[in-house]
Image (tube, rainbow, N blue to C red):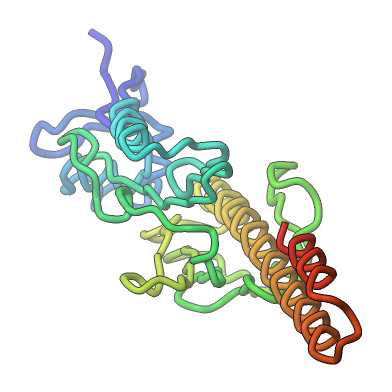
Length: 263
């Protein structure tokens, strides 16, 4: 009889690792994602839900819950990075729908999964590793060069900071600062338990974090462009109004220029 991994549902194979209390088995890939052999004694005593959340695996059930909820809201996902961020470019909306496996299986959404924000709500972001700030980006920072989804670590330009490799990453998250009356920030967690900086778990999490920051920077660049355009239009209107008040142009000429600027 084949042994099935309780996390990914695939055949755990001959290298299956048995959990305590009859909770089933872990395959080698999920064991590695959950922290590796060094975490085995701790993993054996954890609930399946806790291990699933630690692994951060996505399931068809989780995807179905999020997709159904998005459809209800009229939210059309045009870009995404896993379940860390979803973007609706048509309606200029963004969501951070990270959902635990246990919530997905119980057909429940956490608060962040059900909340959507306007592009204009995004003020900035910060990459935090081991509780230390690595780099920041957002309004007023340099634009990101290159494609969003080029290759590994596709984020480039002015928002990658320098950091010292310490061997073990205890946590990795992106803090998103919002201009929102209800929420001032959102935390996107990529690593919540110790992982070696040479592990695939860390490298994958880092790549996802960089992709998320690339998308956030593009949104902030768009906000910057709209802000600059709005200021430019206001300045031009002010100049034409002064000319009108001076009698240098007629009301008809002023109205025509105003209509052109406000198109």
